[in-house]
Image 1: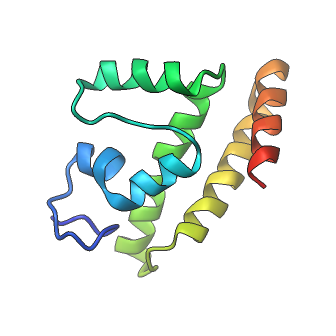
Image 2: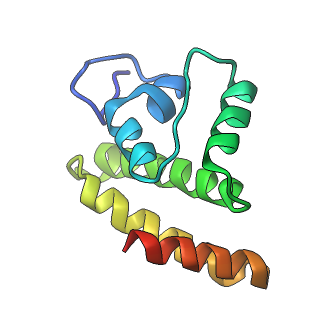
Length: 118
């Protein structure tokens, strides 16, 4: 299957969907997370963590990946259109929900980080 998030007509692989698709790249860059797809996955994560430099990196990466996946599914199964604004709203909502269930230190860090986006 081809990636529904971009116009490149590229086969949808995990690497493409989450790291090299122009839509996904825009999502990551908006949040200040830079991936080097020339590296192995583990090295990509280590490098991105060092560059991002936050204790909430894991939570943010998890929610970004989840929201990209959900946005992809809404296009395929619900007939939605590719929309960075819609992805952003979903990401903020999902991360806000994560912050409600997180430990107090993580929750306050997430909320502070989120407030810098809004």
